[in-house]
Image (cartoon, rainbow, N blue to C red; front, side, top):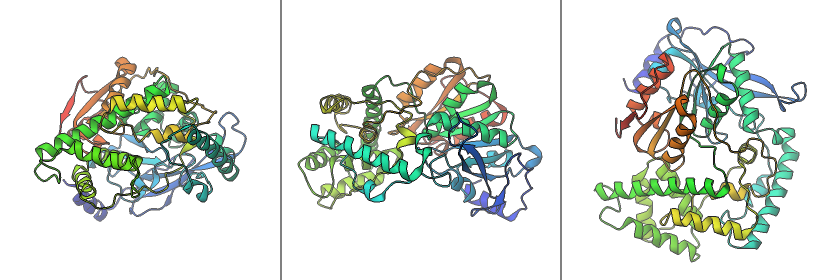
Amino acid sequence: MNSLLSLLMVAALPVPAAPPAAGLDWYTCGKADDAQCAYLTVPVDWTHPGGEKIDIAVGRRPALDQAHKVGTLIFGPGGPWDPGVSRVTDGYDRFSDTLLDRFDIVSFDPRGSNGSHAVSCDPEQVAAAPYPVLADQQDFDDMLAYNRALWAECERRTGDLWNHADMTSNVRDLDALRAALGERQLTFQGSSYGTLLGEAYAERFPQRVRAIVLESVDDHSSRSTAEFLTAQTWASEDAFDAFVAWCARTESCALHGHDVVAVWNRLYDSAVAGRPDFTPFDLVAITYKRTKDADYDKLADYLAAVDGGAPGARLGSLPVVLPAFCADWSLPVRDYREYAGLLRRAARVAPHTHFPVQVFAVTSCLGWENVVYPQHDLHVRTATPLLLLNSRHDSATGWNWARNVERQLGRHGVLVTYEGDGHGSYSLSQCIRAVTDAYLISLTVPPRGTSCAAGT
């Protein structure tokens, strides 16, 4: 049954009322007829639970088959700071009909985002951000000065939450949500940055885990800034290579029969030379986005058009996600000399794409000191192994990351590979959905080494 037909059938049928969840006052919201919203009140600082409070926005769509409901599935959005509530309440069809039948689907806006006391910064300061790829020590110094001025103003506008948007705080929020929903154990699916939340929860509360799916896996074990950038560079180059191979075998590709690498290098070199319509970072970021979404036809069309004389695209202001990233990653860089060495190392790993878009994360965190949840190897001891899902070619969360997390988990984690391209394999593969649904409903753990062919 396709998802559109399923939604139409669901809309035509009465939805059984879900039992009330302890501690949450639900009200009707969103575009979906059966959607509900609530607010979960939590401390700003979990080490001082009697202090200032904030409200976390929560959304729910009740299970369509309440008589056979397994429980509540909490979805952890990516980003960081992607919205979760709207994905549940506005008819979001991320999950299969099977899961919609058997689980109340719940998600939330993480603290500091959207409906959960969103961080506030000066938009003019944000728009005035320096170019994220640094060229000399003066650029390095200017970025440090900009960062410190921006952070001071963001903290002034946001309040103490600015200092408490880290992963350890989000883990406590997630556990409070589990308890407020009346669930003895957590059933969770995290996507992209949401996998970091699932990993951290499994470490802190292993006895409270029923099942955790990590889709498009973040590896939080990088020992250094160089190791972080190298891993991300590998993923970007691997996805670019997959795009080049697709174009070579696909007649509809706008660059089919052409030397795609030569076209890309020509555009990159022209940006380095100072063409006014786009920068090297713009080209890398657009390539990253299109390979991440496996929009290969759109990427080929864009590259062919710009190579043929059309103007290139410039990115707008990049989002401020600092306290949700910089507090979770220790990525120090002492000076421009060290920074330049990092870029040279990245270029050796990626002779075509040169550097990953995540260089933006490194420059945006220059000077950050309050790292609350630094990188480390995972130590998870859950009764049910965690289920890891990853595409073979994913520019955002590379297969290298997923394999390394599986190694860290040992017998407490199993990776299932989608032998295709793109970010978010549950949405790309019926085979991956079937494996995942069996795991979430029946706790059926697939054999180690399981994979799903591209297109299945």
